[in-house]
Each structure stands twice: as C-alpha cells, then as structure tokens.
Length: 350
Image (cartoon, rainbow, N blue to C red):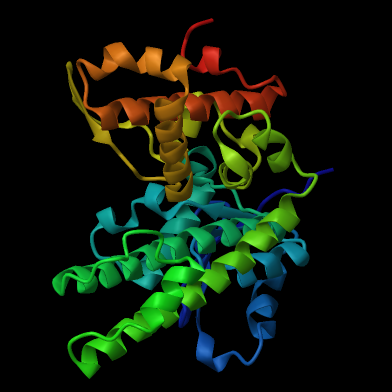
C-alpha cells in the first residue's frame, strides 16, 4: 500500500545558502528553514530537519550543477525526490525574486502538481553523469586548445614567420616552435607559454580519449559506431550518454526540444510566427549532431542527393540543422524500439 503524500518540500539550493519551505497537503505553510552552508560541518543537521518528511512527503529540487551531493543523499536515505527544470518554472517572471519566495513557489508548484506535469527533468545516475563529463571535458579542452593554436598562428602571421602551415600539435611542429625566437624576448616567452599549454592540453585530451575507449568497450556506444555512417566512437558515445534513457521522452518532438532543434514560436490568436532554432537544450548533442551532419553532407551520396534541392532555396546551415534533427529522430527511434538505424528512413526515402 502506497504512502499518502502529506507534505511538499521546496528546496532552493545555492553554493552558500539552502532555503527550505514545507507545505501541507492543503497548501498551508508548515515551516521554513534557512541553512548557511559554511556553518554545516556535515550534512547531518540538514537531513535531520527533513527526516519527518521522509516517508510522507515529496521534495522538489532544481536541476543545478551543485546539487548532486544533496539529491544523492536524499535518494540514499529513501526520500521521494523530484528534480525539476528551473527554466520551466519561470521563477524570475513572478516579480520580486528571493530565496524564500523561490522555495515557497517550488513547494507550491509541487503541491499543485505543476512540476510533475511540466517541469520534471531526468536525473542521471553517477555512472552516466561521469561518462558525460568525460565527453564534455574533452570537447571543452579541444576548444581551448584550438583557441591557443589560433593565438600562435596570429603571432606567427604578425611577423610573417613561414613554415608552420601544418598541424601545430604534431611532435615535429612542437619541436620547431620550441626552438623559434621572435623579435623580442617578451614575444618569445609568450610563444613558449602557449606551446607548453598546447602540450599540456594534448596530454590531458589523450588521457580523456583513453578513458573514453575504456568505458565504451563492449558497450552500446561501440556497437552503434559500426551502424551509424560517418559517426565515429565519439559521436556514438555522446548520443548514448547524453540522451540517456530515451523512454522518458513523450515523442520525437520532445527529443528535438531537449536538444534545442525546434523553432521559436510566437503565437497570438490566429497569427503564429516561427523563428530561428531555440538552441535551449543539450549543447553537446547539438554540437555532435551538427558535426555528423557536416560529414554526411560531404561524403554520403544519399545525403548529397537529399540536400541538393534544399540548398537551392535555403542556406547551408539551415539544411545542416534540418539534417541534424532527422538524424536525432532516427537515433531516438533506434534506441527506443531496437530497430536498425536507416539513413533512407531519416531522409524520408522509405
């Protein structure tokens, strides 16, 4: 027999402050409590305060990057926890925004059922979260390294230094750059500092790529690598770990919205305007799908034939993102039903 929920707890969690509001089933305020994080030597007092609501209450927490210790602690102790999307709560639109009002509003929306209907988000377990971090850390460090390489090339071009048109991350190029002296000692020091940063980032990226191969060995991501044309292991791993449990999506439109591959909509009465992509969603997936679409548009003849008439009336970036959405839906259907991925079906040729 299930326990009847009698209390609804809203938690506004920050790095320094934790504001809690408890409502009864009729919406009346039971109690409020504010914890200063720096005064908590451990999390014991916090969980002790919430103990009366463990068996007969629900707790709503915003999905922010610093809440994993708190949510994990609640789950380990058997609490009924709801992780909600803060962007769908629209707390800033309610007027005056304070920690107390936020906690009250989260608890109220939980009591009304609004969070369950509209704002619940998926909470990845630690294993999936860690694998996501490997992919995201590699992507971030690749971007940083590219920025450093651009600075090196700009400095070389400023003094018309030739002979460095290849891959600046290769051992040969690094050795040549290490022995290069520029017009002044200061410029040479700047160049050497950038070179050392490139070498350090290269070692870090290699470590992450090794971990990526280890964690995908014999996994679904490695299996998908051989069934997704021009995708590669990195793309397959990102699709698997960033999408997570695809059964949580209500349909293909929900998946596209999760990645941010849906247009902005401004509707009033009988007038509706559809604008650019929202780009409010999973940035890593959007990047991976865009890169995959570029490779397909370059090398796959089926995709070239599909894109040719569209490129006559639309910009190439629009065609690329349209293809990215089709690829996303194809992968989603494959993970949901277990059917083989079909490029022809993604392109509407079946």
